[in-house]
Image (cartoon, rainbow, N blue to C red; front, top):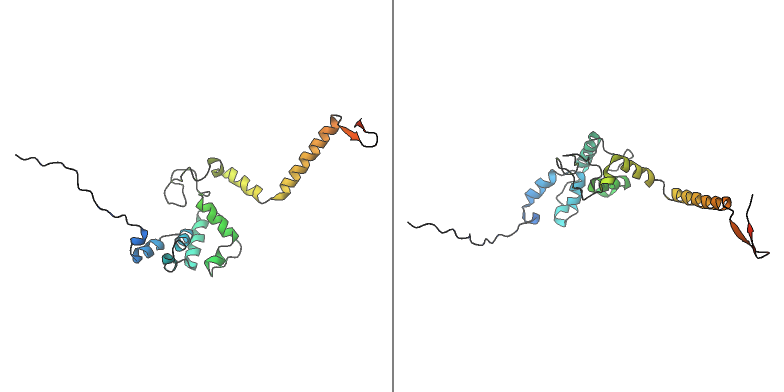
Length: 184
């Protein structure tokens, strides 16, 4: 009785296929499932996709409605829906950046807004920044700008001067070339 030999299977010559190897119909079908920010990124990833990916008014409005239903930040000022460049004003860019870094996602299982049903990767955003209170603090301080820094430096300077006055700060007297004690 001859037993079959269990030899290793012959080395396969599989060629790795990429996204560009798929037919154009599949590209269009994939793009039809993408929300506006992902469709825009897909559109600008290649010249091939630029002319076939739709990022029109319906997609932008659907994205706004979806964000509103999830109680996420939506711009309340005028938005131009004519072109992608006109639509992506500063506020929309900030929203897309926050989405890209998963800053809007909940910290619970299945709480990712970018990849439906997934939990966000922990290495994308530091944990201390994901909590709502920290996000609100960062947002509150981001609008203040240089005024806060100037007031803080001025208060530190005044505090140091007052501490010097209280401790009997000595300053050089230019006319007599002696140190005078500042006492009140």
